[in-house]
Image 1 (cartoon, one colour):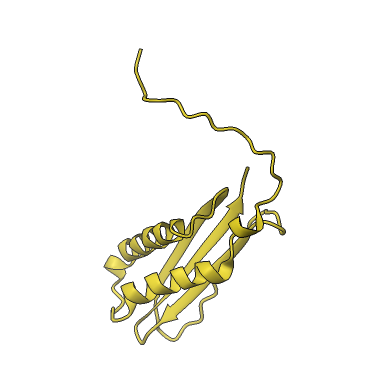
Image 2 (image 1 turned 90 degrees about the vertical axis):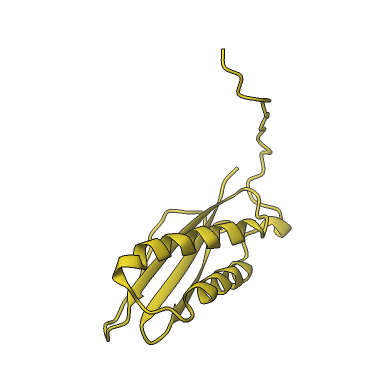
Length: 127
């Protein structure tokens, strides 16, 4: 029989909503998104061959920086879009079924003369 290490018992807390200090606050998350995006794309030129990789790197860094906020009982979902600025209009939308009282989201968009980058973070409460 395989040994998978010590067993951790996880028990339901029966909380139907998060404590006030443990909520997903969009203002705090937006600051994290902004700092990651600006640091990673500030002086970059759009390159379609690297855009997918860049979007994945940005998403991972945003997710990791949001973990520093220590928001328990929230599933953090990150979506990042990197595109070229060429005189076109772009609208990014998302649709989900969620709890209006406890679930929330934050986003930030950066653009320079060559590219735009939008990062969205969704905090979905679960217990």
